[in-house]
Picture 1 (cartoon, rainbow over the protein chains, first blue to last red):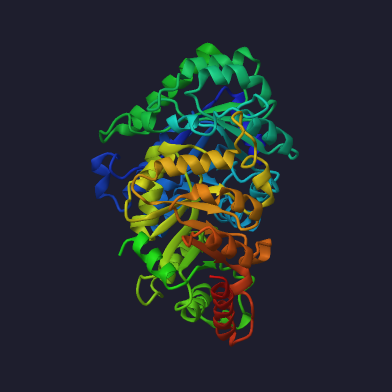
Picture 2: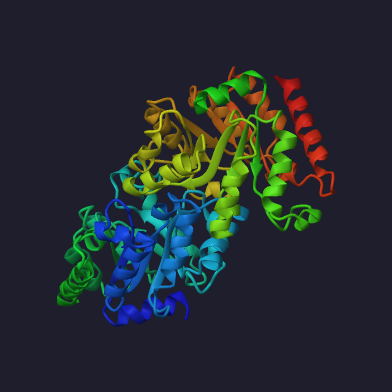
Amino acid sequence: MTAQQKLKNKIENGLHLCVGLDTDITKIPKHLFSSDNPVTEFNKIIIENTYEHAAAYKINFAFYEKDGSKGLDNILETLTFFPSKDPLLIADAKRGDIGNTSQMYAKSVFEHFGFDAVTLHPYMGFDSLEPFLNYSDKINFILALTSNPGSNDFEKLKLEDGQYLYQKVIKSIKEWNKKNNCGIVFGATNLSELQSNIKDFGDMPVLLPGFGSQGGNLEEVVRTFYSNNNNNFIINVSRALIYCNGSPGFGKNVSDSIQQLNEEIKKII
Amino acid sequence: MTAQQKLKNKIENGLHLCVGLDTDITKIPKHLFSSDNPVTEFNKIIIENTYEHAAAYKINFAFYEKDGSKGLDNILETLTFFPSKDPLLIADAKRGDIGNTSQMYAKSVFEHFGFDAVTLHPYMGFDSLEPFLNYSDKINFILALTSNPGSNDFEKLKLEDGQYLYQKVIKSIKEWNKKNNCGIVFGATNLSELQSNIKDFGDMPVLLPGFGSQGGNLEEVVRTFYSNNNNNFIINVSRALIYCNGSPGFGKNVSDSIQQLNEEIKKII
């Protein structure tokens, strides 16, 4: 199944949550330390308890790379825990380099790991993204406006023609979306910018980080999309969900939490 | 020794070349395929034959990540081939993410791998770079103006105040350089921009990719720096150097090539 189909299926079933596997050994429940591999054991429990309620999973590469090759093995092992491949599996790797180098990064995330989607930096322009865009059955979520304070430093700079840099990035992504395989990263913390730019997203899927720990408002984001007749979005929840409870039975709490979030979303849509 | 001291020592000895280990299994000499690990065997020969003539080495992570954990093991093994740690070892990883994620990326390149320096994307702003900048004995080369055609798409956009985005990025990096551990990536293909912006680099080191395969002119770049009384730069050579010959005795050719490049540089400085 293509990445586009996977996402469509989930969204048609009212699922908009992306579970962020930002797995941090210092934050996982202490009782898991007795297992052979606490990181993948934790991921396994999170996946088992969210699988029916999530549209997507986002593996944050940084949290694995800090352990070198062992960490990359943990990514591969984690990918085996999905009973089938039907949720969208996103490599949150934020790559981007000159063409021949991006080609290697694309091979890594799409071929070696077999992810459905990736997150990318736009700074270096089209030819830095092109090798990823050549994979027509994948989704490339390109950073437009991020959820962090630093989004003010460059993303929100005003250009000579009056638009902001992130708006120019969105327009460029739309032009580069010839294979219908581009998406946008738009921080959930930027509600007013979301409201004023949502018409420019076209039919590109939007990945929204920044909910929970970073302060994004779930209800307002969902309302903004649906009131604009747009359901093509996924909201990432990482720390606020996966570390919601540290007891031996934490899986049940995580399951309850994601279902509660889904209920909140369903009330709006 | 700090990264700053390593670079200073090399530059004081007139060394300005950075050897880019963009090691591609499809391009390395065929006779190496009989060794246990052709990639690291190739790197070993390149390092042995360039070690006395290079200021720095730049490991392009993409070329290793495409092989997953095996690739990261190859990076670690490659780092053992340096008889001492005195050349600057750069992780060309082009990372950048929100704070807690960048913290993990910084741990990966500086602590797990033990690199002296890294390349970073500026798009997400200060807090995405800060965890790297907290390592005062490392050098953080932040993308300003890159060597690829896509540098026209965003980097060369004109801002409301008349300066180009990459110029604003350079000014911001200068402000953020409180610990004297920031550097700039400036593509060697942008000679006129180099000439008109070199005064703004201050005392930050500059990493120049884009020489050779991408068309940057070595002599003109070196002349521009020295005629501005600035010697704080390293020029990356990857494909044009490491694949200059595919015969069993290729190490000698690579050694001759880098020495010839050094001679060309010495004629100018």
